[in-house]
Image 1: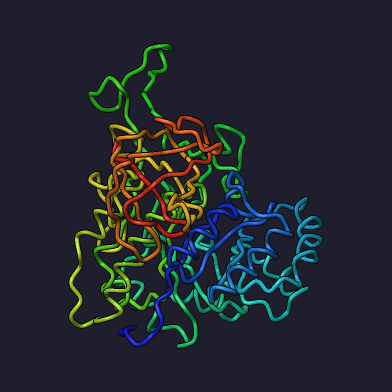
Image 2: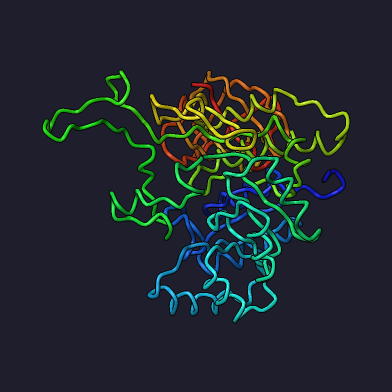
Length: 411
């Protein structure tokens, strides 16, 4: 089934308020975020109830949508707290709730009968019979398990009611176990991945120990650094947008509520550029490698197409390191420009100095280069470098950047 005539949503992560606003400003059609409790990213900044109100106002002012994750697998002790929490947020105009636990779905429907429900990828939906079961429970969108191929997604789309949407991950970290349903963190560190506290042991370094030789550690591969046997490459589908659309996916989901604001801006910007080119001319679309180049300026592991075309092999794992590739550093965020003086106010994020060549990019604006020639502190005194975190500076640029434009420097 072709999907060319349907709206394609670019859905971005929002770990805190700054990242949420950045995602929307840089071109996301929708964002997903967690509250202070009951979200599967307890380590993200997440939003208080008052911040959720503010966030939804901002989102709707920008004609976008906001989805709240309540996708933990609840234990008995969670239920009274969750019931109370839902009562505190039920009047906020949240566009949809991402859930995976039938009990959580029941609690939401009790207090918000008209709430739109999206089935989280944590529910591990891998076939159309399961998807239709959830549709009968009131779900309007199914977030497919990462383990589904494009062929399987196409078949699921053909066997779902037309009004039911499919959302699928198109970029970001991959888990070693079924879409995040991993026991390693709880077993090894006492922190439950299914309740939002994963310590990511799949990224740790492992050696073998023989029972009769305690203290003697053997690398699993011939490498003195050990072996990252559970360490998946990152998913990246920016070069395969037509295939995703043709499979019937209408929401393209980026992983990363724990990632930085710079990561969100860079990845959303790259996918926005590629998706806009596709939507402008689906039949004549040709992938622009520059979009991939821009994407790679955010920290990332090596990339894979995941399960979309075939079951992953050893080529989709990185056995040597769990480190990220970080070729660029985020050095500043543009705040305002004084038209009288021509100086631009910048909030520093990493050190840079006079003489540095900086790349600047903004929402739907390709990057360009500037050389820092003059820079002043808040007192108007000339300075040669900006070493202090979130230091406020005034800089003279040849080309005036817009508010919320980002400055980065090649390492």
